[in-house]
Length: 87
Image (cartoon, rainbow, N blue to C red; front, side, top):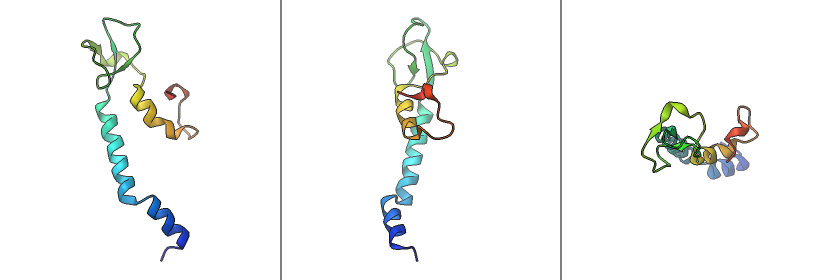
């Protein structure tokens, strides 16, 4: 039987909800394909999901769109977090 403090933690971080959040985040990441506009190379880079531009080169961009940068923000300070991900 979990201790009272453990039960409170489990209730706040319901495993089913956490798994659903992980699944949703993974699905958001899957639809965000990095790209840079061919016609306007000086324009800020983005992804095919977050932009309305018509002509993109998905291979040309290593940057993350604003949505993915925000998804990464809670992991700031963790090993592997890169400063260039900061929104």
